[in-house]
Length: 295
Image 1 (cartoon, helix red, strand yellow):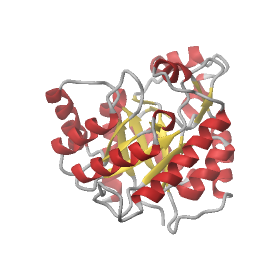
Image 2 (tube, helix red, strand yellow; image 1 turned 90 degrees about the horizontal axis):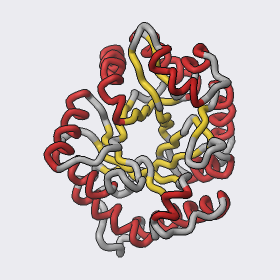
Image 3 (cartoon, one colour; image 1 turned 90 degrees about the vertical axis):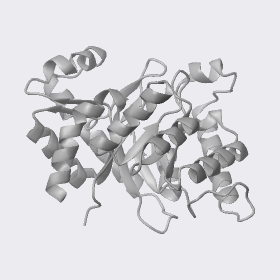
Image 4 (cartoon, helix red, strand yellow; image 1 turned 120 degrees about the vertical axis):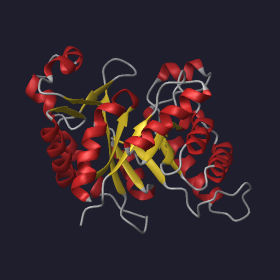
């Protein structure tokens, strides 16, 4: 049996306290299961934003999507994770990634490193978090016996790390583009290969991981061409039909979008979908229809 769907929204825009609390409450009202915050300069600082989100809401879990591991010392990160989990009443999910934007590391005065070095650092971070937070001697203590770990991955080595250590395997559905800091979408067939490669890796976690996909664009519309025009301009090799078929794009009439979400669960196993803040309202009718069907 497939897992039930879960839906998260990644809140990107900083806001004053009242506005931040209001949009977190709106996410809860729309039915989102997880309120998420990324880890980029110019966006909200993850951990205080998540504490505020938990204080403003009752039901949703909160999480990072995803931390740039290169920004973090593992021991200091363990303190942040434990404190945030305690202050949110055990609602934290910890998302981790290598980071892919050189300019942010340079602006922060931090080494960016090679892809190998970035994965090495993430691997050390995961191991240290397991060691520190798994010790009864660590202070502070998180509220959960294990804070669920999400790892965002696409490359072979990252898929091995994810299979070995993650409670939630998050697929980006994209690869680094030719322009620094950009991502190019994967086709459905390319994502098939990445998911199969993940499943071929050895597992060390006792339970199967939940599979997540980050959706980059949502538009419930009878005419998806206008909303897909910016994507088509960035990806001149794509036709409109190919863009609509991309796994990270949900664009079309409501019934078509709902059917695509169900089909991707069957094809890939994705039961946890994350949408970006600009599409929080647009995805709401899709979420509601899928909730109705599973009730």
